[in-house]
Amino acid sequence: MLRGAGIVVGSLIDPERIANDHIRIHALEGQLFRRVVQDAAVDCRVACRIWRERDLYEAAAGILNEPEERVRATLAKLARPAGCPWRAEQKAATLAAWLVLTSGDPQSALHPLH
Image 1 (spheres, helix red, strand yellow):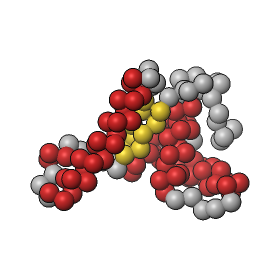
Image 2 (cartoon, one colour):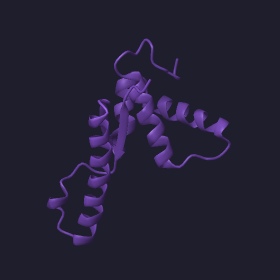
Image 3 (cartoon, one colour):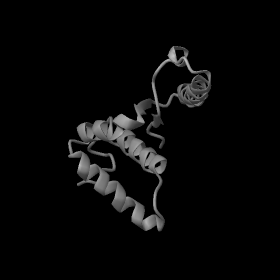
């Protein structure tokens, strides 16, 4: 059963507020991809949460009621069975999925810290 979708983004700033054309184009591209995923989630009636990447670990610590260091350590342990180092975006995606699973009904959610 699909429980929800978690989207991790680099920025939530309105691209129109960015003066540099090159940077604004990248921001618009990120906004486009985010909207495509959000629209697909809405169309499929899937709850969707968005986190800014630089705030994700702090948000996770609050949601999971665990210290940020423990959240990071648990993610590092999850990477070992995969047999290769995880890149930052892979860790962020995994953490977003974990938070989506944990939200709603924490009793039935996968909660690897406990």
